[in-house]
Amino acid sequence: MRPTGPRPPAALLLILAALLLALGLGELLCRFIQPAQSTPGLAFVDGVLRYKPGQRSQHAQPDEADAAAPFAINAKGWNSGHADYPAQRGPALRLCVVGGALAAALEVPPMASLAENLERELERLPGGAEVFRFGMEGAPLSQHLLMARKAALPLKPDILVVLLAPGDIAASRQPGGPLGEHFQKLLFDSAEMVEELPPTPYAPSATERLRQWSALARRVFHSKARPRPAPDARFEAWAHAPAAQTTPQAPDEAQELDRRTARYLLGRLQAEAVAAGAKLLVVMDGAHAELEAGAPLFELDRTLAANRLAGEEARLLGVAFVDLHPVLAEDFRRHGSSFGSAPGAKRQDGRRDGGWNAYAHAVAARAVAESLYRLGWLYPQTQR
Image 1 (tube, rainbow, N blue to C red):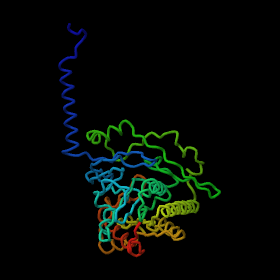
Image 2 (image 1 turned 90 degrees about the vertical axis):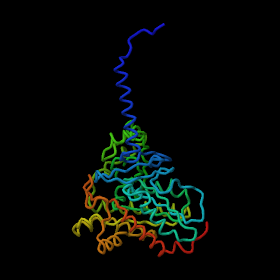
Image 3 (image 1 turned 135 degrees about the horizontal axis):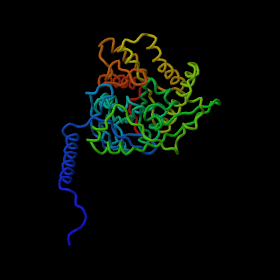
Image 4 (image 1 turned 60 degrees about the vertical axis):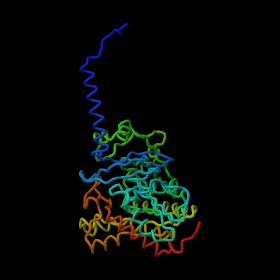
């Protein structure tokens, strides 16, 4: 008995088949022939925002539409030259680097970041060295503490390196950027009390899930800025913060809050590193974008105020501190080479772009290695 009811026209079936074929060919083209540039997809694992494990693609540069660098997200969800970060220790000296965009290093190939360069700088040590990095674009110092606590220190490193950018201290108190709500923040009150505000768990939107799954969708939905995902109302800690936390402070008040922020976070990092059997080294970026742009001295001095503050608090706490600005300034004076992927470019917030290119990562890695030798942390290499 033949089925009754209207049948779809043959032309409609032909159109659907042609559309599916075109989508399939487009996916193959964007995945294998001309890989779509994109930003890596995100995941929220063990209370920490990271990248979705196992991704490999080309990272689109926000300031240069035609520039891209490959990224390789490992099994733990971090951009790295290491496919995984094993918990088991071998004879190699183990260093863990935590930080924001400088540690994520999406602007350069995986083997060209500070971490991989540092690993090569230390390869002549007895047993060699392994350097694992934990970086997330936009993460402030408060998030560095969370990444160290939950991801880096459980791996029992010999040395924990915290890689700071000038804006990372102030950003620990004020949510900002498309991912700000998914980072740990600090809340202060007038009684010298500090509260760690947990991050809002990240859940990708339907568009973001499609973009992560399909290379064709990554090309279609690609934009210079990440879409802001819908927050989880159960974890809206900042919604209950006093209004004073979101209103501008006078310069002296802001500086005092920066000082309290640095003191608390560096102190916690030091305490938790020691508890895990690790030494702590804080490394801070210099005002290289201002150097390259020929910025006036007052602008240079204003940017370096955060370096001076962090250095002072580190010394009071007995934390080893490396200010990269003198190193970068001397290198720029001698060679004039650019340190950034887009020299002199400014971001949407008006600040100069702080990303490093491969040359800057190599210069910084040499400076960190020299500092470790001077500190006496490399010889003799103690056994665990």
